[in-house]
Length: 220
Image (cartoon, rainbow, N blue to C red; front, side, top):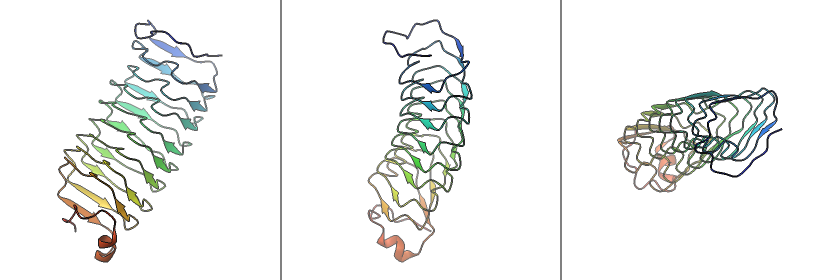
């Protein structure tokens, strides 16, 4: 069994870990293990706790299909992470899950995910495209804040609100498609972005009825 402990782990010489069996990776267990470059998670793991791998130097990791829950910030500040494969069984991309994963260029959001949490992809500078499945109904505040290379993103039908700061400082994003289900556009959603065109799937009357649209007038 694994247990959490408290000390300065930033200089621990742990390079690789493989588990025989484990149902949960507890809160912050490998946080700041800055030499940990390889992790093989067993098929028995069902939960990865908050900040479990924060600040670890992975470049790539596959989360097994047995995992049903990813805690807040589980992979936050993994500044070398380039690719991650997420399991089909999760229902939520938790708050700050990939916060400041500045090299993350490839991530799948599985069908079945219903919520993308606050600041989930904050400062994921290398993301260029995000495919959000139709099952997602809520996207949190600042979820894609400062995703500087993000060029294309779809908002799935069923999302009702674009929360504050959603695409703040997305300097490469110039066009976004918004479904007719959206009735509220928050503050600074597109601030400091390259946004020139908003394509709204509903009618002009529906668009005018949206709360908070006064700053967004260039639509098709």
